[in-house]
Length: 507
Length: 45
Image (cartoon, chains in turn purple, orange):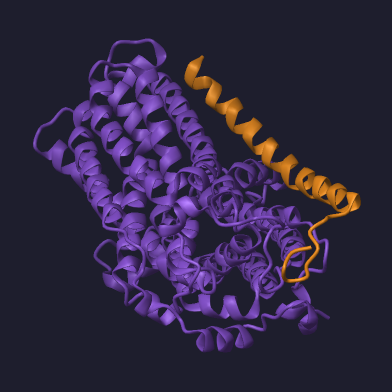
């Protein structure tokens, strides 16, 4: 088995078709992308004990920290009680913290051991995490969910996310953006498949004694394991020095695309790494903040207007409010579609207009659109408001998908997967910064007496400000100084350690 | 053949494999897009 996983076994034979690699990468990203869809389990898990209705934890409010902890863990004096949304929500935090940190820690290992081994380990972690979580639901131990899906699954997310990046960039030197965009598109789209599938499975398994979640976790574990293993064994790395026949780098864009390589341990010592860290962090902070509040924002800004009634949200009946909430859920679904489209669209476009110009468009258009959103809200133009945020989400997704190609242009391809892994800490940071900024600014505005429908206006201007900062980070990007490049000897050593060879090394 | 000695002339069979691989990945993806668009219709209904 170990032999099948070694990097040399994955070096492609002559006449290998490079277009087989993107679907292998895509299937892994589609599988791990289910992380975004975990909210589909929240309501059933809040009823895991009571089944038909949630059993609250009757812990003593003055019982101190131990009693509070028992409530969080789902145990009270009268026996097991249902988990709260806040306790379940920790899974999201764990996902993105462990995604970023495992990508940063294991990036160099992935470069050396190759994408297949990384993909296999990722599938074991992701599918194994589901199994551990299933036992957690079955025995009603929430810490098993945190450990299984949050920690172990989170490590699988990091390994799976970075596993194809370097390989795709080496297979598609002529279309780096499109190649990584095809894979990273999957991470945005995973929940679109996983969430409705999980919903169907839970309905199938639900009965008088079960909400169907642990059975769904077991089934999803099997499905994702098979799919990800298929993807991992579909990976092939190109032989050293491979290039598409007849391909030559475009001399017009040569200045911003290096043919040299910066070592992983040198990359973060350059200002370029931190400028790109800022570019990713600022772009993601703005987008992730909007995603988190998309549904309540649409409801609060437009209220009854969404169902043809000219009244604010607070004046609607329960049925009318439910109708509005359904429409707002449709809005978040639409945003996820544009997020995916942006990943493949903008990343592909960046191959033609260049990475720096692509981010200029993200930051300049993004800032204008964020600043224009309050106007669309004030004139109560739902279509304009929706169109603005759909376009913003394309640039959020495009920012994720274009960054690996930007890194390869600036730092070379030898360590691009590992450098990308370290850069993903910007995502973890943004995952905290964006939602905190948006939620606290809204609460602050409401506290000042601003009407709820206008409470997001200042937030939008602040997010536009973040994008202006990102614009200047991108503006400062220059080619890396030659002093940071690896020497030929260092490069040869690294390639030997990474088991990279020409065609003669293939088994 | 390029300078590394790697031929880049994928066989017709490999293109068939590419088509199969993309269909296998594409079907669930299209199903997900279809489900999402079905929900998104409400926004314009």
